[in-house]
Length: 146
Image (cartoon, rainbow, N blue to C red; front, side):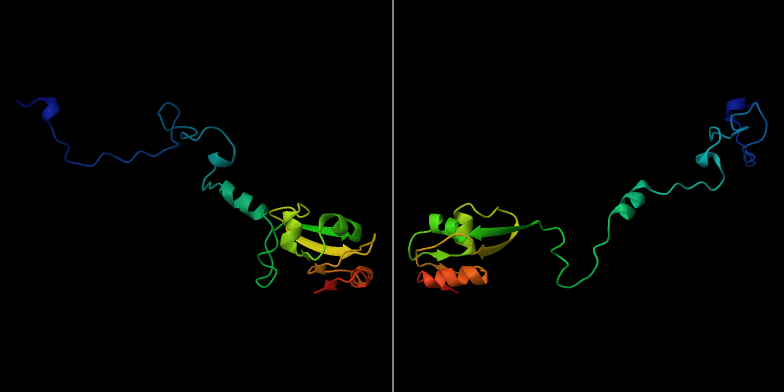
């Protein structure tokens, strides 16, 4: 006679139906805990990353303004008296020269303009934007605005 442990099943085991009865392992709430969104049929929570992405503003446009939106910009106005103190006679006043003197901040898109406040007596070559009164004062001192 064969032992029970050597017997082979000839038919499929019946499928377990969840949510039936109180005492079995998959009864009542069927392993879903109690109440709430995740306990309902067809529950599918929206991924958190989607909400994070939706909160980020869109960058409008695809043209000239596309890459400039995140570059910090500073506006610097420089008096003629400050240029008088920083530069020697015959020097060129350029963006690079101003950065070398420590007027412009590194890593910023800087807009510079020379204003006509103060006086100037040195002849300099100015290669940055200037106001009308500053242009007149520089040319009066023998300098040029390029």
